[in-house]
Image (cartoon, rainbow, N blue to C red; front, side):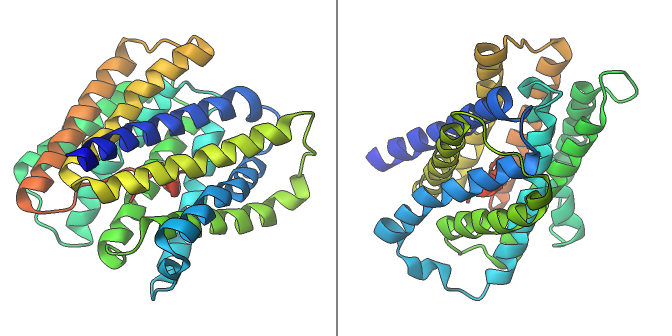
Length: 304
């Protein structure tokens, strides 16, 4: 019982930490530095808590497996997704960003049907369709509210779904700490390669902000990783939807952003659809979608 409460606490803590991280990036960094430079520093400093966990908790041997190429590919996808998410901070509030990203479980259901040939019954199909209605309500395509950044966020949600699909296909029993390590390492190398020509020297105390962001990202990823190991998927997976609520709260605390009627309605529809899909997948014995947000998310892919 203590382990279960600890797992729930770590899950809530991990998703809250990621929203706090996003808030810092949005408020202090995204307007002054290129997106990939931000990702570079966060990946660099995130490896500190991840390496500590590898040395003292899991052991470095978890990095040795025959699925390294899958993990590296997931790292590439995670970097692309992280760049899309960070770039969206320039224009949009969390109440717009997070609901669109949480369409990933809906997309995963469709990908599982077409690629893994999983049977998807009428109830999950209806849940997917209703969830996409929620996405349309939040994004409002065809209006001045809809931007390229919002469209790219939907692409980011597809990438998140593909990442989880790869876990289901190839690496279901691999260490989630190893996922985080390879994800951050891949992000670090690729960000460095593409940041070189557009590098902006750090200003004042920004080094310490980047350092804190990296530690926060790595710590949040570890919280989610250990929570996923402690809790059953049917209990852990719904915790990710707390991030939507946390996004509303931090959006107001940091930026005085209040979600409008459409953002609240769309978020409720997307959440209920996603939770129903998790319930159905649990009932039929599938491993529910877990967001790895994580954000740098691929912890990096916004889980386990």
